[in-house]
Length: 291
Image 1: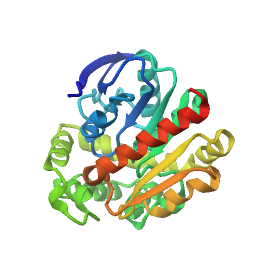
Image 2: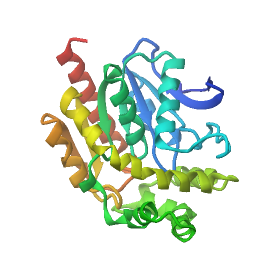
Image 3: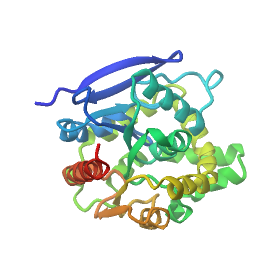
Protein backbone atom coordinates (compact mmCIF):
# COMPACT_ATOMS: atom_id res chain seq x y z
CA UNK A 1 0.00 0.00 0.00
CA UNK A 2 1.13 3.55 -0.74
CA UNK A 3 2.41 5.47 2.23
CA UNK A 4 1.30 9.09 2.11
CA UNK A 5 3.33 11.41 4.31
CA UNK A 6 1.92 14.55 5.90
CA UNK A 7 4.16 17.43 6.83
CA UNK A 8 4.44 21.07 7.79
CA UNK A 9 7.23 23.39 6.69
CA UNK A 10 8.08 26.95 7.64
CA UNK A 11 8.05 29.14 4.54
CA UNK A 12 9.33 32.56 5.56
CA UNK A 13 7.34 32.45 8.78
CA UNK A 14 4.22 30.85 7.29
CA UNK A 15 3.33 27.28 8.17
CA UNK A 16 2.56 25.36 4.97
CA UNK A 17 0.94 21.94 5.24
CA UNK A 18 1.50 19.39 2.49
CA UNK A 19 0.96 15.80 1.49
CA UNK A 20 3.49 13.76 -0.42
CA UNK A 21 4.23 10.23 -1.53
CA UNK A 22 6.73 8.43 -3.71
CA UNK A 23 10.50 8.02 -3.80
CA UNK A 24 12.58 11.08 -3.01
CA UNK A 25 14.58 10.60 -6.23
CA UNK A 26 11.55 10.11 -8.52
CA UNK A 27 10.36 12.74 -11.03
CA UNK A 28 8.28 15.32 -9.18
CA UNK A 29 4.64 16.22 -9.80
CA UNK A 30 3.42 19.28 -7.87
CA UNK A 31 -0.35 19.30 -7.36
CA UNK A 32 -1.97 22.73 -6.96
CA UNK A 33 -5.57 22.77 -5.78
CA UNK A 34 -8.34 25.30 -6.37
CA UNK A 35 -11.33 26.92 -4.68
CA UNK A 36 -12.76 26.12 -2.19
CA UNK A 37 -10.75 23.00 -1.54
CA UNK A 38 -7.20 22.04 -0.48
CA UNK A 39 -4.69 19.25 -0.98
CA UNK A 40 -7.22 16.68 0.19
CA UNK A 41 -8.82 16.87 -3.27
CA UNK A 42 -5.86 14.76 -4.44
CA UNK A 43 -6.45 11.96 -1.91
CA UNK A 44 -7.06 9.51 -4.77
CA UNK A 45 -4.58 10.84 -7.31
CA UNK A 46 -1.57 10.76 -4.99
CA UNK A 47 -1.56 7.00 -4.39
CA UNK A 48 -2.44 6.34 -8.03
CA UNK A 49 0.78 8.00 -9.24
CA UNK A 50 3.23 7.65 -6.37
CA UNK A 51 4.79 4.41 -7.62
CA UNK A 52 6.33 6.33 -10.54
CA UNK A 53 6.51 9.92 -9.27
CA UNK A 54 7.20 11.92 -6.16
CA UNK A 55 3.82 13.60 -5.75
CA UNK A 56 3.60 16.75 -3.59
CA UNK A 57 0.36 18.58 -2.75
CA UNK A 58 0.58 21.73 -0.59
CA UNK A 59 -2.39 23.61 0.83
CA UNK A 60 -2.31 27.22 -0.35
CA UNK A 61 -2.26 30.02 2.24
CA UNK A 62 -5.74 30.50 3.66
CA UNK A 63 -6.81 26.99 2.60
CA UNK A 64 -6.84 23.64 4.34
CA UNK A 65 -4.28 23.22 7.10
CA UNK A 66 -1.85 25.88 5.90
CA UNK A 67 -1.84 29.08 7.95
CA UNK A 68 -4.53 31.66 7.28
CA UNK A 69 -2.85 34.83 8.55
CA UNK A 70 -4.92 37.93 9.26
CA UNK A 71 -5.65 40.11 6.25
CA UNK A 72 -3.89 42.97 8.04
CA UNK A 73 -0.60 41.06 7.85
CA UNK A 74 -0.98 39.04 4.65
CA UNK A 75 -2.31 40.28 1.32
CA UNK A 76 -4.57 37.66 -0.25
CA UNK A 77 -3.69 37.95 -3.91
CA UNK A 78 -2.75 35.32 -6.45
CA UNK A 79 0.66 36.91 -6.81
CA UNK A 80 1.20 36.32 -3.10
CA UNK A 81 -0.07 32.72 -3.29
CA UNK A 82 2.38 32.09 -6.12
CA UNK A 83 5.26 33.63 -4.17
CA UNK A 84 4.58 31.40 -1.15
CA UNK A 85 4.18 28.29 -3.30
CA UNK A 86 7.39 29.03 -5.20
CA UNK A 87 9.26 29.47 -1.92
CA UNK A 88 7.68 26.24 -0.65
CA UNK A 89 9.22 24.34 -3.57
CA UNK A 90 12.59 25.88 -2.79
CA UNK A 91 12.39 25.14 0.93
CA UNK A 92 11.64 21.44 0.37
CA UNK A 93 14.22 21.20 -2.42
CA UNK A 94 12.22 20.82 -5.63
CA UNK A 95 14.46 21.96 -8.49
CA UNK A 96 12.46 20.77 -11.52
CA UNK A 97 8.95 19.41 -11.61
CA UNK A 98 5.72 18.98 -13.53
CA UNK A 99 2.70 20.91 -12.28
CA UNK A 100 -0.93 19.88 -12.09
CA UNK A 101 -3.00 23.06 -12.08
CA UNK A 102 -6.67 23.09 -11.16
CA UNK A 103 -8.89 26.18 -10.82
CA UNK A 104 -6.97 28.60 -8.51
CA UNK A 105 -3.92 26.40 -8.97
CA UNK A 106 -3.71 27.59 -12.59
CA UNK A 107 -2.93 31.29 -12.01
CA UNK A 108 -0.74 30.23 -9.09
CA UNK A 109 1.29 27.67 -11.04
CA UNK A 110 1.44 29.67 -14.25
CA UNK A 111 2.92 32.65 -12.41
CA UNK A 112 5.62 30.28 -11.17
CA UNK A 113 6.19 29.01 -14.72
CA UNK A 114 6.53 32.54 -16.12
CA UNK A 115 9.06 33.45 -13.42
CA UNK A 116 11.08 30.23 -13.67
CA UNK A 117 10.38 28.38 -16.93
CA UNK A 118 13.52 26.28 -16.43
CA UNK A 119 11.90 24.60 -13.42
CA UNK A 120 8.79 23.39 -15.26
CA UNK A 121 9.07 19.92 -16.77
CA UNK A 122 5.44 19.71 -17.98
CA UNK A 123 1.97 21.07 -17.24
CA UNK A 124 -1.28 19.19 -16.66
CA UNK A 125 -4.28 21.49 -16.54
CA UNK A 126 -7.49 20.07 -15.11
CA UNK A 127 -10.07 22.80 -15.58
CA UNK A 128 -7.34 25.37 -15.03
CA UNK A 129 -8.04 28.30 -17.32
CA UNK A 130 -5.76 30.78 -19.12
CA UNK A 131 -8.03 32.19 -21.87
CA UNK A 132 -10.96 34.60 -21.71
CA UNK A 133 -13.10 32.35 -23.91
CA UNK A 134 -12.87 29.77 -21.14
CA UNK A 135 -14.76 31.96 -18.67
CA UNK A 136 -18.49 31.21 -18.51
CA UNK A 137 -21.36 33.52 -17.60
CA UNK A 138 -21.04 32.07 -14.10
CA UNK A 139 -18.33 34.67 -13.60
CA UNK A 140 -20.73 37.59 -14.15
CA UNK A 141 -21.31 38.38 -10.44
CA UNK A 142 -17.55 38.36 -9.85
CA UNK A 143 -16.96 40.49 -12.94
CA UNK A 144 -19.47 42.99 -11.57
CA UNK A 145 -17.40 43.21 -8.40
CA UNK A 146 -14.26 43.82 -10.46
CA UNK A 147 -15.95 46.73 -12.24
CA UNK A 148 -17.46 48.16 -9.07
CA UNK A 149 -15.99 46.84 -5.79
CA UNK A 150 -18.88 48.15 -3.73
CA UNK A 151 -20.02 46.67 -0.45
CA UNK A 152 -23.20 45.48 -2.16
CA UNK A 153 -21.34 43.71 -4.96
CA UNK A 154 -18.96 42.14 -2.44
CA UNK A 155 -21.87 40.94 -0.31
CA UNK A 156 -23.51 39.38 -3.38
CA UNK A 157 -20.51 37.07 -3.75
CA UNK A 158 -21.14 35.45 -0.37
CA UNK A 159 -23.54 33.11 -2.13
CA UNK A 160 -20.45 31.38 -3.59
CA UNK A 161 -19.36 30.55 -0.02
CA UNK A 162 -22.55 28.80 1.11
CA UNK A 163 -22.48 25.07 1.92
CA UNK A 164 -25.08 24.46 -0.77
CA UNK A 165 -22.93 26.12 -3.42
CA UNK A 166 -19.93 23.98 -2.46
CA UNK A 167 -21.98 20.81 -2.91
CA UNK A 168 -23.32 22.17 -6.20
CA UNK A 169 -19.79 22.75 -7.47
CA UNK A 170 -19.02 19.08 -6.86
CA UNK A 171 -22.22 17.70 -8.36
CA UNK A 172 -23.16 20.04 -11.22
CA UNK A 173 -22.69 18.32 -14.55
CA UNK A 174 -22.16 14.90 -12.99
CA UNK A 175 -24.30 12.17 -14.55
CA UNK A 176 -24.31 9.98 -11.41
CA UNK A 177 -23.92 12.03 -8.25
CA UNK A 178 -23.85 8.89 -6.09
CA UNK A 179 -20.19 8.43 -7.03
CA UNK A 180 -19.22 11.85 -5.61
CA UNK A 181 -17.88 11.33 -2.10
CA UNK A 182 -19.25 13.75 0.51
CA UNK A 183 -15.83 13.80 2.18
CA UNK A 184 -14.37 16.46 -0.10
CA UNK A 185 -17.15 19.03 0.00
CA UNK A 186 -17.80 18.43 3.71
CA UNK A 187 -14.19 19.22 4.55
CA UNK A 188 -14.24 22.24 2.23
CA UNK A 189 -17.31 23.58 4.02
CA UNK A 190 -15.64 23.03 7.39
CA UNK A 191 -12.67 25.19 6.36
CA UNK A 192 -14.95 27.86 4.86
CA UNK A 193 -16.67 28.35 8.22
CA UNK A 194 -13.47 29.34 10.05
CA UNK A 195 -13.49 32.89 11.40
CA UNK A 196 -12.21 35.24 8.72
CA UNK A 197 -12.22 32.68 5.91
CA UNK A 198 -15.11 34.40 4.15
CA UNK A 199 -13.27 37.70 3.71
CA UNK A 200 -10.13 35.89 2.59
CA UNK A 201 -12.11 34.23 -0.19
CA UNK A 202 -13.87 37.46 -1.13
CA UNK A 203 -10.47 39.17 -1.43
CA UNK A 204 -9.34 36.43 -3.82
CA UNK A 205 -12.54 36.77 -5.87
CA UNK A 206 -11.70 40.44 -6.27
CA UNK A 207 -8.07 39.80 -7.17
CA UNK A 208 -8.96 37.21 -9.82
CA UNK A 209 -9.24 40.10 -12.28
CA UNK A 210 -5.44 40.28 -12.18
CA UNK A 211 -5.28 36.68 -13.36
CA UNK A 212 -7.36 37.57 -16.42
CA UNK A 213 -5.11 40.56 -17.02
CA UNK A 214 -2.15 38.16 -17.04
CA UNK A 215 -3.64 35.78 -19.60
CA UNK A 216 -1.63 37.37 -22.46
CA UNK A 217 1.57 36.89 -20.42
CA UNK A 218 0.70 33.25 -19.74
CA UNK A 219 -0.02 32.73 -23.43
CA UNK A 220 3.30 34.33 -24.41
CA UNK A 221 5.03 31.88 -22.07
CA UNK A 222 3.25 28.99 -23.81
CA UNK A 223 4.35 30.20 -27.26
CA UNK A 224 7.95 30.82 -26.25
CA UNK A 225 8.64 27.74 -24.13
CA UNK A 226 6.15 25.19 -25.52
CA UNK A 227 6.02 23.14 -22.30
CA UNK A 228 4.70 19.59 -22.69
CA UNK A 229 1.01 20.17 -22.01
CA UNK A 230 -1.97 17.97 -21.20
CA UNK A 231 -5.46 19.36 -20.56
CA UNK A 232 -7.94 17.01 -18.84
CA UNK A 233 -11.27 18.77 -18.61
CA UNK A 234 -14.69 18.19 -17.11
CA UNK A 235 -16.70 19.43 -20.09
CA UNK A 236 -19.76 20.32 -17.97
CA UNK A 237 -17.85 22.73 -15.73
CA UNK A 238 -20.14 25.69 -14.91
CA UNK A 239 -17.20 28.11 -14.64
CA UNK A 240 -14.48 27.03 -17.10
CA UNK A 241 -15.77 26.14 -20.54
CA UNK A 242 -14.36 23.56 -22.98
CA UNK A 243 -13.30 26.43 -25.27
CA UNK A 244 -10.70 27.31 -22.65
CA UNK A 245 -9.18 23.84 -22.95
CA UNK A 246 -9.13 23.90 -26.75
CA UNK A 247 -7.49 27.34 -26.70
CA UNK A 248 -4.24 25.90 -25.35
CA UNK A 249 -3.64 24.36 -28.78
CA UNK A 250 -3.47 27.84 -30.26
CA UNK A 251 -0.25 28.58 -28.40
CA UNK A 252 1.02 25.01 -27.89
CA UNK A 253 0.10 23.20 -31.12
CA UNK A 254 1.05 19.77 -29.78
CA UNK A 255 -0.92 20.18 -26.56
CA UNK A 256 -3.05 17.17 -25.74
CA UNK A 257 -6.68 17.83 -24.75
CA UNK A 258 -9.09 15.28 -23.33
CA UNK A 259 -12.67 15.87 -22.20
CA UNK A 260 -14.71 13.93 -19.68
CA UNK A 261 -18.47 13.90 -19.23
CA UNK A 262 -18.38 15.44 -15.78
CA UNK A 263 -18.20 18.75 -13.97
CA UNK A 264 -15.66 20.99 -12.24
CA UNK A 265 -14.20 18.40 -9.83
CA UNK A 266 -13.39 15.82 -12.48
CA UNK A 267 -11.16 13.77 -10.17
CA UNK A 268 -14.20 12.87 -8.08
CA UNK A 269 -15.75 10.92 -10.95
CA UNK A 270 -12.89 10.14 -13.35
CA UNK A 271 -9.85 9.89 -11.11
CA UNK A 272 -8.64 6.55 -12.47
CA UNK A 273 -8.87 7.66 -16.09
CA UNK A 274 -7.13 10.96 -15.40
CA UNK A 275 -4.36 9.25 -13.43
CA UNK A 276 -3.74 6.85 -16.33
CA UNK A 277 -3.56 9.73 -18.80
CA UNK A 278 -1.11 11.65 -16.61
CA UNK A 279 1.11 8.61 -16.13
CA UNK A 280 1.26 7.89 -19.85
CA UNK A 281 1.77 11.55 -20.75
CA UNK A 282 4.61 12.21 -18.30
CA UNK A 283 6.40 8.96 -19.05
CA UNK A 284 6.22 9.61 -22.81
CA UNK A 285 7.50 13.15 -22.40
CA UNK A 286 10.39 11.95 -20.25
CA UNK A 287 11.35 9.36 -22.84
CA UNK A 288 11.12 11.95 -25.61
CA UNK A 289 13.38 14.34 -23.71
CA UNK A 290 15.83 11.61 -22.77
CA UNK A 291 15.46 12.28 -19.05
